[in-house]
Image (spheres, rainbow, N blue to C red):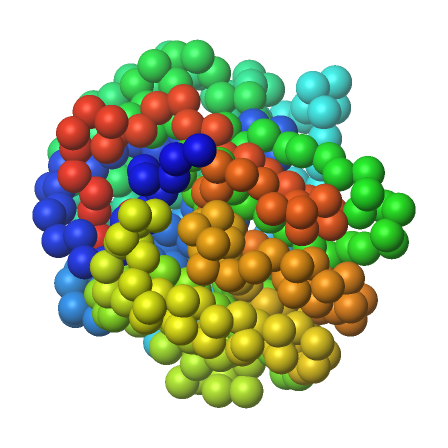
Length: 377
């Protein structure tokens, strides 16, 4: 058994690409829209930290303004503080509908959204355009696939485009630079134990940590909107040092709502390899787990995000038994979100009520394209 290839990219990665890529998140598993929200958080954080005109358009199809979404309050708070960094537009009905229930209103709303998207892409004013739930809009025939693909294929070079939702058409996947499929896994033992509220995002594809960041944005928004005691802890292993772009946006939300958000990083500012583990790696991993265990069992947090816990366990920096025991004892109202790739699935995966594997079908890094600050880290 060898694990020499196990490691994650940290913010010490300094080489960056200038050319924007087309990202597609699809599949039946959870995490598609969340991943897009996580990248939005990173992009805004970059703009906050550096003062760059890193403007994002978050355009959401099939999610009309008649319904309240958890993340809205957090996005509105960031919009108010940094109006030059984000615009959000919602189109469509506020409820689910199938192929046999399409109305003239649905077609008109899809067209309205596409007119806005097309103008934003052509304007060159945005560094990122997120087309949330574009894939099912195309699958339902509400927009012409050929036209959408042609516009995206001819986007400005600098522009990052993210399309999400089930059933991405083959024509869109053909031009995508990145394609992550969210594949659901089911664990009957979670039902046997009566455990709920544990979500795991793993796999080789992009979208694990960004899904967790999106989940954090939703949880913070829920706290702002409903209950200021809805505290969120974001705890990240194997990501020591500085330079992570999401930090700026998280710190801005902390500043506005100090009772809602806590954020801790653990680890060296370096990639940890199996054959080069250092004493500090064990110390930092254990420090993080002590914080996590106390937070989960205290009941003080409604959402606890354990980012990169999976590779920390896979590197044997932490034993899995205390993690299983703690998750079995967690309060019912506490959600725990666990992320990271791993070659050997820990036993606590059996407790997951939601488990999405990010399957990598295509990634620009495989073509030698550099990662990008505000998108990948």
